[in-house]
Length: 69
Image 1 (cartoon, rainbow, N blue to C red):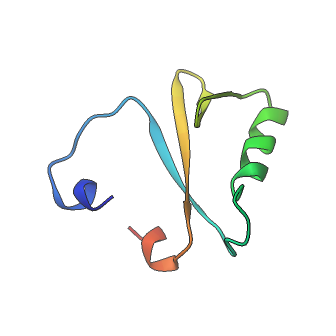
Image 2: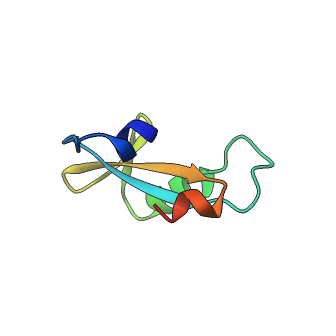
């Protein structure tokens, strides 16, 4: 994360979405996001969800300061 913030921009083949997580009291904090996407017909590919032509990775954020980037 720090490298992306402080160095030259790099083209990637996916989109990253920061997801604010209220309490990290379990290991599967993104389970509801993946279930929501699956119910709407988006399929998981490894750690990403395929949305059209793009793999989208959901990144949990536990601190409000991080989500304000």
